[in-house]
Image 1 (tube, rainbow, N blue to C red):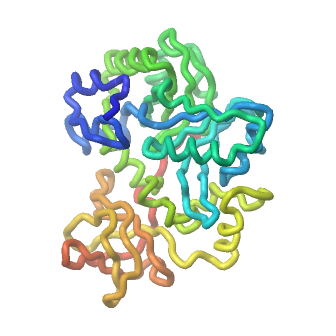
Image 2: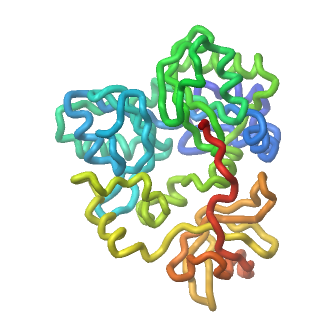
Image 3: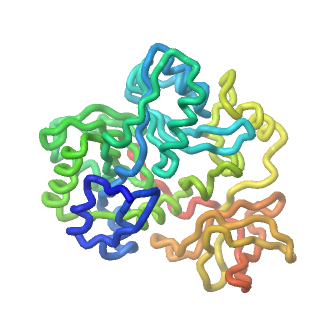
Length: 361
């Protein structure tokens, strides 16, 4: 297994290390719940160096990214970020990702760790344009600083006025004397920053932030998952996959069907016109038991869907899940049985956002 540049720091902090996407990563330090609440109330810092970074550079960089990506990059100005997907022709998802526009001839694509090789191959396969595709993942480390105190903590490291860095924008910023690409983005539903840099610089930044700020909590991938889950942010392989389209998952905002062409557009346009036959909804359990990924959902002994993600929400105390449900059983208030180890738990369809996002205004 690979190790990130922060592996020794995680071990020194007492992290429980697990395999994730081929890396040894911290799942938690002391308590997943404590880490979750720290991000909601104060601030947490995550090692996300396992994520992939792929650069597209050249005269026709925009043309390639526009062709493989569901959202609109032509309307972006420099230093803007946009979320979207790579899709197969049948509308299934290759991966979901962030696109950073550095300029018209240079884009940075941040992809999921488990899909780095697949995404790089996908881009290379479809690159019939005058541009280069470069996998920069092994040369780049990344941390995420998230929570209501994120700005005040990071502001103490720089002369750059972070209040001017608006949501889904980025800039090259000096922090503690080292240069980083810093974006106002995240995967928790809270305000915060994702920070990319060279390995040694990220190591220095991570350690110094924790040394200088008592209000900052190191957080593992466990809390990252519960945080994203509560605000209905998707996890590839669960809410999005080769078998679940962006429209079925409810992320139509990341699909610009007004674009002339991108891979998967024809199928997705047909899905929109004919309306999807199933969709991701929220469900709340009315009995004891956690609703976990893959558990079948039934109405009158007929399987009508399955759980994609489920937890007892640390922020609300409710036992809830995201589930892909066939129509017409997706309507709010519909009662559906979740089959948990051969027993049935009553659930009710509800809003899929279990907690309100608190992004930078």
